[in-house]
Amino acid sequence: MREGGRLLYGGLEDVGVSIAWRDFEPAKGFEWSRSFQSGSLELCLNLAGEGSLHCATGRMELEPLTAGLYVPGGEGLRAWRKPGARQRFLTVAFTSRFLRRHLSQCDGALDPLVERFVLDAACPAGVGEVRRLTPEQEREAARLLHPPTVQAARGLWYQSQVLQLMVTHFFTRGGADELFCERQQRVARERVERVVALLRQHLAAPPALDEIGRQAGCSPFYLSRTFSREMGMTIPQYLRKLRMERAADLLRSGKYNVTEAALEVGYASLSHFSQAFCQTMGCCPALYPLKAPSPATGSPETPPPGTR
Image 1 (spheres, rainbow, N blue to C red):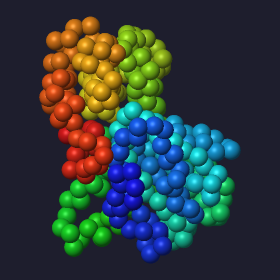
Image 2: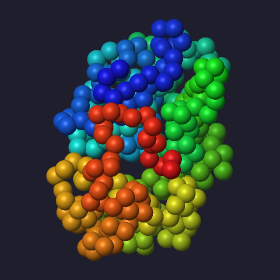
Image 3: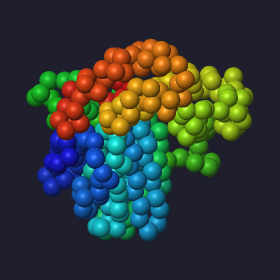
Protein backbone atom coordinates (compact mmCIF):
# COMPACT_ATOMS: atom_id res chain seq x y z
CA MET A 1 0.00 0.00 0.00
CA ARG A 2 1.11 3.58 -0.67
CA GLU A 3 0.95 6.89 1.23
CA GLY A 4 2.09 5.55 4.62
CA GLY A 5 -0.45 2.71 4.64
CA ARG A 6 -0.46 -0.92 5.69
CA LEU A 7 -2.93 -3.76 5.54
CA LEU A 8 -4.00 -4.89 9.01
CA TYR A 9 -6.31 -7.75 8.11
CA GLY A 10 -7.96 -9.70 5.31
CA GLY A 11 -8.40 -9.08 1.61
CA LEU A 12 -11.43 -8.65 -0.60
CA GLU A 13 -10.75 -11.57 -2.90
CA ASP A 14 -10.09 -14.26 -0.30
CA VAL A 15 -11.88 -13.04 2.87
CA GLY A 16 -14.39 -10.55 1.50
CA VAL A 17 -13.31 -7.82 3.92
CA SER A 18 -10.11 -5.87 4.55
CA ILE A 19 -8.90 -3.42 7.20
CA ALA A 20 -6.22 -0.90 6.21
CA TRP A 21 -4.43 1.86 8.14
CA ARG A 22 -3.13 5.08 6.58
CA ASP A 23 -0.88 7.73 8.13
CA PHE A 24 0.62 10.48 5.97
CA GLU A 25 0.79 14.25 5.52
CA PRO A 26 0.20 15.38 1.91
CA ALA A 27 2.12 18.44 0.74
CA LYS A 28 -0.72 19.15 -1.68
CA GLY A 29 -4.28 17.96 -2.17
CA PHE A 30 -4.20 14.15 -2.29
CA GLU A 31 -6.68 12.34 -4.56
CA TRP A 32 -7.89 9.81 -2.02
CA SER A 33 -10.27 8.07 -4.44
CA ARG A 34 -7.29 6.40 -6.15
CA SER A 35 -7.07 4.03 -3.18
CA PHE A 36 -10.75 2.96 -3.27
CA GLN A 37 -11.41 -0.68 -4.05
CA SER A 38 -13.79 -1.34 -6.91
CA GLY A 39 -16.92 -3.34 -6.12
CA SER A 40 -16.78 -2.61 -2.39
CA LEU A 41 -18.55 -0.68 0.32
CA GLU A 42 -16.12 1.14 2.61
CA LEU A 43 -16.29 2.41 6.17
CA CYS A 44 -13.80 5.15 7.07
CA LEU A 45 -12.87 5.70 10.72
CA ASN A 46 -11.29 9.14 10.44
CA LEU A 47 -9.00 9.81 13.41
CA ALA A 48 -7.12 12.90 12.20
CA GLY A 49 -7.14 15.17 9.16
CA GLU A 50 -10.00 16.08 6.85
CA GLY A 51 -11.36 14.44 3.73
CA SER A 52 -14.14 15.26 1.28
CA LEU A 53 -16.08 12.89 -0.97
CA HIS A 54 -18.69 13.71 -3.58
CA CYS A 55 -20.72 11.98 -6.25
CA ALA A 56 -23.82 12.75 -8.30
CA THR A 57 -26.15 12.10 -5.35
CA GLY A 58 -24.38 13.69 -2.41
CA ARG A 59 -21.33 14.94 -0.57
CA MET A 60 -19.53 13.91 2.62
CA GLU A 61 -17.11 15.93 4.74
CA LEU A 62 -15.06 13.90 7.20
CA GLU A 63 -13.58 15.74 10.17
CA PRO A 64 -11.29 14.31 12.86
CA LEU A 65 -12.92 11.61 15.02
CA THR A 66 -15.81 10.91 12.65
CA ALA A 67 -16.92 7.91 10.61
CA GLY A 68 -18.68 7.57 7.27
CA LEU A 69 -19.85 4.93 4.79
CA TYR A 70 -19.46 5.22 1.02
CA VAL A 71 -19.71 3.14 -2.15
CA PRO A 72 -17.06 4.00 -4.80
CA GLY A 73 -19.29 2.73 -7.65
CA GLY A 74 -16.54 2.36 -10.22
CA GLU A 75 -15.28 5.89 -10.86
CA GLY A 76 -18.46 7.65 -9.73
CA LEU A 77 -17.03 8.81 -6.38
CA ARG A 78 -14.27 11.43 -6.17
CA ALA A 79 -12.43 12.12 -2.95
CA TRP A 80 -9.55 14.26 -1.70
CA ARG A 81 -7.51 14.64 1.45
CA LYS A 82 -6.64 18.19 2.51
CA PRO A 83 -2.96 19.21 2.57
CA GLY A 84 -1.03 20.72 5.46
CA ALA A 85 -2.23 18.35 8.20
CA ARG A 86 -1.51 14.78 9.15
CA GLN A 87 -4.05 12.26 7.82
CA ARG A 88 -4.67 9.23 10.06
CA PHE A 89 -7.58 6.92 9.28
CA LEU A 90 -8.73 3.32 9.01
CA THR A 91 -10.72 1.98 6.07
CA VAL A 92 -12.74 -1.22 6.27
CA ALA A 93 -13.83 -2.50 2.83
CA PHE A 94 -16.55 -5.11 2.30
CA THR A 95 -17.77 -7.11 -0.70
CA SER A 96 -21.50 -7.56 -1.21
CA ARG A 97 -21.02 -11.33 -1.03
CA PHE A 98 -19.57 -11.04 2.48
CA LEU A 99 -22.34 -8.69 3.61
CA ARG A 100 -25.12 -10.84 2.16
CA ARG A 101 -23.83 -13.80 4.13
CA HIS A 102 -24.06 -11.86 7.40
CA LEU A 103 -26.92 -9.42 6.80
CA SER A 104 -29.48 -11.37 4.78
CA GLN A 105 -31.84 -11.55 7.79
CA CYS A 106 -31.56 -7.84 8.64
CA ASP A 107 -33.82 -6.30 5.97
CA GLY A 108 -35.58 -3.11 7.07
CA ALA A 109 -33.07 -2.13 9.76
CA LEU A 110 -30.01 -1.53 7.59
CA ASP A 111 -28.61 1.85 6.65
CA PRO A 112 -30.08 2.66 3.19
CA LEU A 113 -26.63 2.79 1.56
CA VAL A 114 -25.70 -0.60 3.01
CA GLU A 115 -29.02 -2.11 1.94
CA ARG A 116 -28.62 -0.89 -1.66
CA PHE A 117 -25.12 -2.31 -1.86
CA VAL A 118 -26.12 -5.67 -0.36
CA LEU A 119 -28.89 -6.01 -2.95
CA ASP A 120 -26.73 -4.89 -5.88
CA ALA A 121 -22.93 -4.69 -5.77
CA ALA A 122 -23.04 -2.68 -9.02
CA CYS A 123 -25.17 0.08 -7.48
CA PRO A 124 -24.13 3.67 -8.29
CA ALA A 125 -21.65 5.59 -6.16
CA GLY A 126 -23.09 6.96 -2.95
CA VAL A 127 -22.21 8.46 0.43
CA GLY A 128 -23.88 8.02 3.81
CA GLU A 129 -24.16 10.23 6.87
CA VAL A 130 -21.14 11.35 8.88
CA ARG A 131 -21.25 10.19 12.49
CA ARG A 132 -19.03 11.33 15.34
CA LEU A 133 -17.04 8.60 17.03
CA THR A 134 -17.82 8.06 20.71
CA PRO A 135 -14.90 7.70 23.16
CA GLU A 136 -15.48 3.93 23.20
CA GLN A 137 -15.43 3.80 19.39
CA GLU A 138 -12.14 5.74 19.42
CA ARG A 139 -10.70 3.09 21.75
CA GLU A 140 -12.00 0.32 19.48
CA ALA A 141 -10.25 1.95 16.52
CA ALA A 142 -7.00 2.15 18.49
CA ARG A 143 -7.22 -1.55 19.32
CA LEU A 144 -7.39 -2.37 15.61
CA LEU A 145 -3.86 -0.99 15.33
CA HIS A 146 -2.59 -2.86 18.38
CA PRO A 147 -4.59 -6.10 18.81
CA PRO A 148 -4.70 -7.18 22.49
CA THR A 149 -4.04 -10.83 21.67
CA VAL A 150 -1.30 -13.22 20.65
CA GLN A 151 -0.28 -13.43 17.00
CA ALA A 152 -1.85 -16.85 16.45
CA ALA A 153 -5.29 -15.57 17.50
CA ARG A 154 -5.26 -12.28 15.61
CA GLY A 155 -7.20 -13.52 12.57
CA LEU A 156 -10.04 -14.71 14.81
CA TRP A 157 -9.90 -11.50 16.85
CA TYR A 158 -10.12 -9.33 13.73
CA GLN A 159 -13.14 -11.34 12.54
CA SER A 160 -14.95 -10.45 15.76
CA GLN A 161 -14.02 -6.77 15.39
CA VAL A 162 -15.38 -6.69 11.82
CA LEU A 163 -18.75 -7.97 13.04
CA GLN A 164 -18.75 -5.40 15.85
CA LEU A 165 -18.07 -2.60 13.35
CA MET A 166 -21.01 -3.80 11.25
CA VAL A 167 -23.29 -3.79 14.31
CA THR A 168 -22.17 -0.27 15.22
CA HIS A 169 -22.22 1.42 11.80
CA PHE A 170 -24.57 -0.52 9.49
CA PHE A 171 -27.91 -0.21 11.25
CA THR A 172 -30.38 2.61 11.70
CA ARG A 173 -33.56 2.97 13.72
CA GLY A 174 -36.10 5.74 13.50
CA GLY A 175 -39.77 6.66 13.79
CA ALA A 176 -41.87 4.17 15.75
CA ASP A 177 -38.91 1.77 15.97
CA GLU A 178 -36.81 4.28 17.91
CA LEU A 179 -36.94 3.64 21.65
CA PHE A 180 -37.14 6.55 24.08
CA CYS A 181 -33.67 5.87 25.47
CA GLU A 182 -32.28 5.65 21.93
CA ARG A 183 -33.86 8.99 21.05
CA GLN A 184 -32.23 10.55 24.11
CA GLN A 185 -28.86 9.15 23.06
CA ARG A 186 -29.32 10.34 19.49
CA VAL A 187 -30.31 13.87 20.57
CA ALA A 188 -27.34 13.99 22.95
CA ARG A 189 -24.95 12.97 20.15
CA GLU A 190 -26.44 15.55 17.79
CA ARG A 191 -26.02 18.30 20.40
CA VAL A 192 -22.43 17.33 21.04
CA GLU A 193 -21.76 17.35 17.28
CA ARG A 194 -23.15 20.91 17.07
CA VAL A 195 -20.87 22.00 19.89
CA VAL A 196 -17.79 20.43 18.27
CA ALA A 197 -18.65 22.04 14.92
CA LEU A 198 -19.03 25.46 16.61
CA LEU A 199 -15.72 25.13 18.43
CA ARG A 200 -13.90 24.13 15.23
CA GLN A 201 -15.51 27.00 13.32
CA HIS A 202 -14.62 29.60 15.97
CA LEU A 203 -11.42 28.13 17.37
CA ALA A 204 -9.69 31.44 18.16
CA ALA A 205 -12.80 33.21 19.52
CA PRO A 206 -15.45 30.63 20.54
CA PRO A 207 -18.97 31.74 21.54
CA ALA A 208 -19.92 32.00 25.21
CA LEU A 209 -21.47 28.93 26.82
CA ASP A 210 -24.92 30.56 26.82
CA GLU A 211 -24.72 31.06 23.05
CA ILE A 212 -23.43 27.53 22.49
CA GLY A 213 -26.35 26.22 24.54
CA ARG A 214 -28.81 28.30 22.55
CA GLN A 215 -27.51 26.95 19.25
CA ALA A 216 -27.48 23.38 20.60
CA GLY A 217 -31.08 23.74 21.82
CA CYS A 218 -30.70 23.24 25.57
CA SER A 219 -29.58 25.00 28.77
CA PRO A 220 -25.84 25.57 29.29
CA PHE A 221 -25.93 23.46 32.47
CA TYR A 222 -27.56 20.49 30.76
CA LEU A 223 -25.32 20.85 27.72
CA SER A 224 -22.20 20.82 29.90
CA ARG A 225 -23.29 17.59 31.59
CA THR A 226 -24.23 15.99 28.25
CA PHE A 227 -20.94 16.98 26.61
CA SER A 228 -18.84 15.67 29.50
CA ARG A 229 -20.71 12.36 29.51
CA GLU A 230 -20.40 11.84 25.73
CA MET A 231 -16.85 13.09 25.22
CA GLY A 232 -15.18 12.28 28.53
CA MET A 233 -14.07 15.89 29.06
CA THR A 234 -15.58 19.33 29.62
CA ILE A 235 -16.22 21.84 26.84
CA PRO A 236 -13.24 24.04 27.89
CA GLN A 237 -11.00 20.97 28.04
CA TYR A 238 -12.10 19.88 24.57
CA LEU A 239 -11.59 23.40 23.21
CA ARG A 240 -8.05 23.41 24.56
CA LYS A 241 -7.44 19.99 22.95
CA LEU A 242 -8.66 21.29 19.56
CA ARG A 243 -6.53 24.43 19.88
CA MET A 244 -3.38 22.51 20.76
CA GLU A 245 -3.90 20.02 17.93
CA ARG A 246 -4.34 22.89 15.48
CA ALA A 247 -1.27 24.67 16.88
CA ALA A 248 0.73 21.44 16.54
CA ASP A 249 -0.26 21.21 12.86
CA LEU A 250 0.81 24.83 12.31
CA LEU A 251 4.17 24.32 14.04
CA ARG A 252 4.80 21.07 12.16
CA SER A 253 4.16 22.82 8.86
CA GLY A 254 7.17 25.08 9.48
CA LYS A 255 5.22 28.14 8.33
CA TYR A 256 4.40 29.45 11.84
CA ASN A 257 6.61 30.24 14.79
CA VAL A 258 5.40 29.73 18.40
CA THR A 259 3.98 33.25 18.78
CA GLU A 260 2.12 33.09 15.47
CA ALA A 261 0.67 29.68 16.28
CA ALA A 262 -0.47 30.90 19.70
CA LEU A 263 -2.26 33.92 18.21
CA GLU A 264 -3.80 31.79 15.45
CA VAL A 265 -5.57 29.56 18.01
CA GLY A 266 -6.71 32.39 20.30
CA TYR A 267 -3.96 32.76 22.93
CA ALA A 268 -2.79 36.29 23.69
CA SER A 269 -0.43 35.12 26.46
CA LEU A 270 2.57 33.17 25.23
CA SER A 271 3.21 31.70 28.70
CA HIS A 272 -0.36 30.39 28.99
CA PHE A 273 -0.12 28.92 25.51
CA SER A 274 3.21 27.21 26.25
CA GLN A 275 1.86 25.74 29.49
CA ALA A 276 -1.30 24.41 27.79
CA PHE A 277 0.69 23.03 24.85
CA CYS A 278 3.16 21.24 27.10
CA GLN A 279 0.36 19.67 29.16
CA THR A 280 -1.51 18.51 26.06
CA MET A 281 1.26 17.53 23.64
CA GLY A 282 3.97 16.44 26.08
CA CYS A 283 6.66 18.96 25.19
CA CYS A 284 7.11 22.71 24.86
CA PRO A 285 5.96 24.23 21.54
CA ALA A 286 9.45 25.37 20.55
CA LEU A 287 10.69 21.76 20.59
CA TYR A 288 7.57 20.16 19.10
CA PRO A 289 8.61 20.31 15.41
CA LEU A 290 11.79 18.41 16.36
CA LYS A 291 10.02 15.80 18.48
CA ALA A 292 6.93 15.27 16.30
CA PRO A 293 7.03 11.95 14.38
CA SER A 294 7.74 12.28 10.71
CA PRO A 295 4.57 11.67 8.63
CA ALA A 296 6.75 10.09 5.94
CA THR A 297 7.50 7.12 8.21
CA GLY A 298 3.85 6.49 9.00
CA SER A 299 4.95 4.85 12.28
CA PRO A 300 2.19 2.61 13.60
CA GLU A 301 3.62 2.89 17.12
CA THR A 302 2.20 6.39 17.61
CA PRO A 303 -1.30 6.01 19.11
CA PRO A 304 -4.22 7.76 17.41
CA PRO A 305 -5.71 10.93 18.97
CA GLY A 306 -7.92 10.36 21.96
CA THR A 307 -6.24 7.08 23.04
CA ARG A 308 -3.69 8.42 25.48
